[in-house]
Length: 302
Image (cartoon, rainbow, N blue to C red; front, side, top):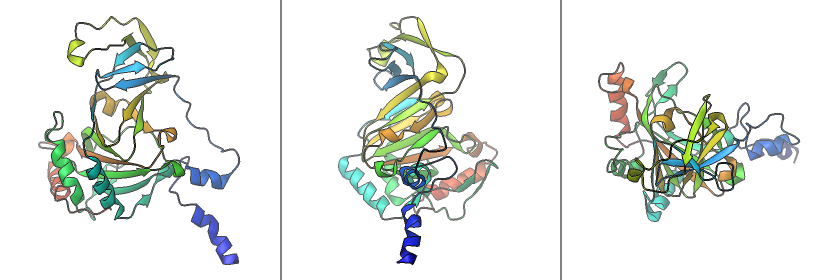
């Protein structure tokens, strides 16, 4: 009995949190008031509208009816069917999930990378999984995703019981290229975008027309809001595909808040190579090798 009792705390601590990162599991274990502080919530919330490509002030907020352009986001709803979604998740669950930070679990298919030292190793990387072949083929049929050839796939598993979340961050730009593509499976969620740049965002009256009709109809800016006080929420339906490019990829940090995980959710993120690893780049040959391995679709989680 004594041995079993001694093992209990370790069994309960089934999380991969390090440093200031926490989840519900380790927070319950620590007990009492946490010795860390969460980042302050942004003051003003805007909602991304996929029909117009603008971020619109939330209802009953100080900026209801006001908006600003939010370029670099493409959302494709129902990218996979319910049946395809169920099969993808079944195939993922055949392989083990590794514990990760902030209550997440993960499966990685890609080279081992040290981003700080800008070094990578291909040992152990056998390619993307076979079940992603059709997903990748289908991506290339959509405008804006022509020629998209991912060399890395990361599956992240979120669930409310673990308090899963991911802090605001920008994806690396040394190895990973312009388009960041994510498939949202099992449940809807919200991707929260924030930007720490100084200065203000100029606001116009919120448009209601389709994008092509906005050119001559947008009213001149007449309000502004500090950029650092703004959060843009991008609603992500289940089975939707999200593509981030340009400012949304390189200037606005993205996050998933704990409160937006209400059921199990799997995010499948695909990353392409940067120009440094492409034709004419300084590491073109390594890039070709990474593509050859990745697109063999013979991979297992590394």
